Image 1 (cartoon, rainbow, N blue to C red):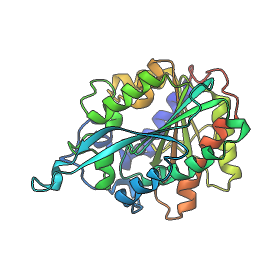
Image 2 (cartoon, rainbow, N blue to C red):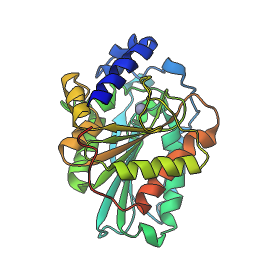
Image 3 (cartoon, helix red, strand yellow):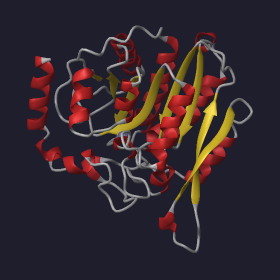
Image 4 (cartoon, rainbow, N blue to C red):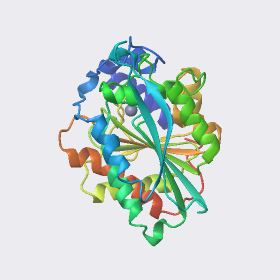
Length: 309
Ligand SMILES: [Zn+2]
């Protein structure tokens, strides 16, 4: 606990430049609409949303593909009513003993996680014996209007990942309904961040051993690992942020209602991938997300022991 407090105090010192952006990153709806976001050194990767849907449709032979919602984009103008689907893709083995839910594109400007999805589908389509224990469900893109505008926010200017308490956004409600109906054993949420290299965040209901195995596999994949959290403070284990019950409390008092907090309260561990959003090396940004999923599929899901951190 003391180390966490020291890390946080140090972090808020080191992260002064980031502090002025805190209201923007902590608020539920800080923007006017799906504004393009260029804070904290993010270098956007162009993503053609129409081509992305076409690419996913090609996987309908091997996966059950369902449209679970359509999200309207009023910013497109009244003359052209536009809406974008949120898709769910499922492996066919629904009777498998363990269930993994992968979420891509909660922040529409963090494109690497979205680009990783077809590679993850390729991995799952190989049907390796080691993966047979898992029924996998992928929801993508979680914030399609944000993707269309290369924005962190949705059409209403809301950060979906701050809306898992009042659930005022359709996007958060869609995800919650999927979590309730699928009852996953763990969630993998694909993001990008301002840290120097890859980082994994494991919440209180996750496994530290699995988290360490993931970071090691990413390192072996010749991906740069970050020594520090995206808030600026040093990580006790490079590349791994353990966010246990203390963090759950911090998030609750700061009204930081994330998907991870929502899942923790329901006994589900979340593994949030954060690739380095400042590099233009697509391998460094896209591949770690695939390695994380591969490693979690092949690592026994051990007891949930991040709680005390
Ligand atoms: Zn994000």
